Image (cartoon, rainbow, N blue to C red; front, side, top):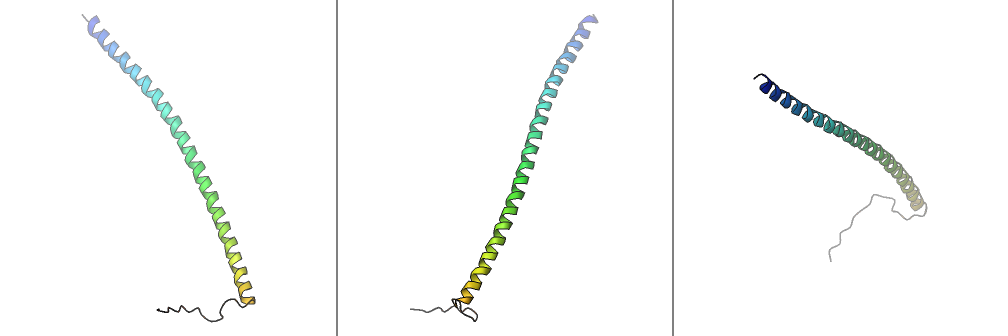
Length: 91
């Protein structure tokens, strides 16, 4: 009679072993996918950093253009010398 229960226990252990093997395969797949996601996030962070650098460079260029434009307007007397006044005329 000990053969019956022993076989049932072995069958259950084998089933658990098969399930564990499938879980390990799935875990390996999840690890590979997670690594891919981490690499993509790192790439996006790098690209975002480059874009911020580009925006800073464009802002610096715009600032220089504004300075040149103000200097040209002053030389041509196109801007008032005093503080700007906003006249609201009601019609």
